[in-house]
Amino acid sequence: MSSPWERLLAKLIGPVFRRLEQLQAEQGRLDDRLQAEQGVQAQARAQFQQAADEQAAKLQQFHDDLLREKRRRDAERDGLLRAEGAARESLAEQLRTEASAQAARAGEAAGRLAAAQAEVTNRLSEESAVRARELAALSDQLAGNVAAAESRAGERLAQESRAFSERLVAEAARFASESARHESALGELAATGERWKAEVDRRAADLSARLAGEAAERAAALAALAARAQEAARAAESRLGGLESRLARVEDPVGPAFDYSGFEDRFRGAEALIRERHAVYLELLRGRAPVADLGCGRGELLQVLAAAGVEALGVEADAGQAARAAGNRLAVERADLREWLAARPAGSLGAVTLLQVIEHFDLRDQVQVISEAHRALRPGGALLIETVNPHCPEAAEWFYIDPTHRRPVYPEMMQFLMERSGFTGVTTRFQVPCSTAPAGEPPNHKTGGDFAVWGYRP
Image 1 (cartoon, rainbow, N blue to C red):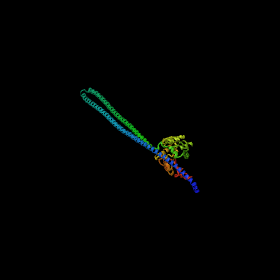
Image 2: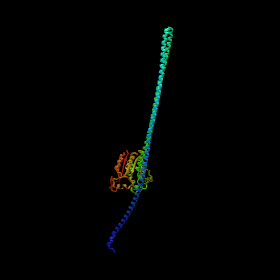
Image 3: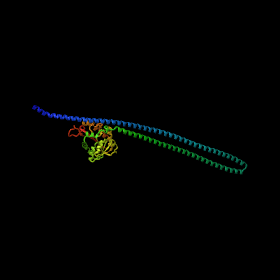
Image 4: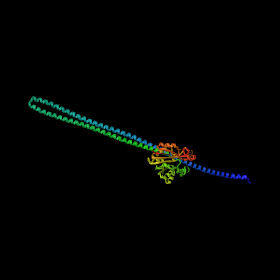
């Protein structure tokens, strides 16, 4: 039989032992949950590694295809350049041959004209010499006849002599007229020769001009061919650059097997909580429709804007997230947000938002998205970016739990990028206080888990 002290001790220690047993049981349950969670994480890591390996294989194949396409394009371009050089050389040779032939034909024509002129001149000279000799003979005969007449016949002979002299004068006049006619014919022949020479010169000039025109046309055709070849080369290089750019920014490291929607439900928070946080942006976005929410996820901001009557459209690349937002009767397009934004006409949007998105990109894509947003916004439009605050130690510890995060983005860097892209009035606000934030004080750069930066297109 126990003593009163033992009964009192048992009464006092019994609850302690029972509480200890309860704590041990609770510890066992916690250990079981931890092991289960570790198993889930190990499975997720294995799936992630498998998807990453598959993606790496696809990227390598894509890269090999790009290299083959580039080699083919280079070969086509070299072929076009060689064809252009051969065509130029052939055209130059044809032009040289044709010009030589035309020059030879012009020389032959000039030679024939000179020979014809020389022949006509010789014939006229010979005929003039013959006429002169005949005239001299007649003159001598006249002189002898006159002397004989004066010595023999007196007056009758003198009359005959005068008549003969008159005939002689008439014959001389006729000869002079004939000589003048021959001189006129010679002048006409010389003029005809000049006309022939002018015609030959004109035809030679026309031929030279036609050859020059044909040469210019062929040179223009070759230049156009070269321009087309260069344009084709540039288009191929541009396409290759676009493919390389797309290859460089492929960002699906987890693959379709990863349930990103379920991941956000567990680690980001319920939709109602996120809607409450996003409601603070309504004042900024009201009056700036249409709003493009890039990387809209489950569509919490779209729900806030729809409830306020603000026209908005979401863009989401993840199939599960896009289907979930569309299931809430929200306007959502499934697309790569960079390609979608680049296709927007300039000045067509009133506001662009990227909430918890920019940390998924590398620096090049961050710069591109901010620059494209500036182009697509109308004057007075706003760009709003929200992301994790790496200055807050508690937030930084959780950053890489999302396997799709690239690297933290500091608020100072984000403000710099927006200002360099042309945005004005750039403002930073820290929000979502960490557990260490003093009660009643607004979050700052050390106690705010998130930060938002916005600016305006002038």
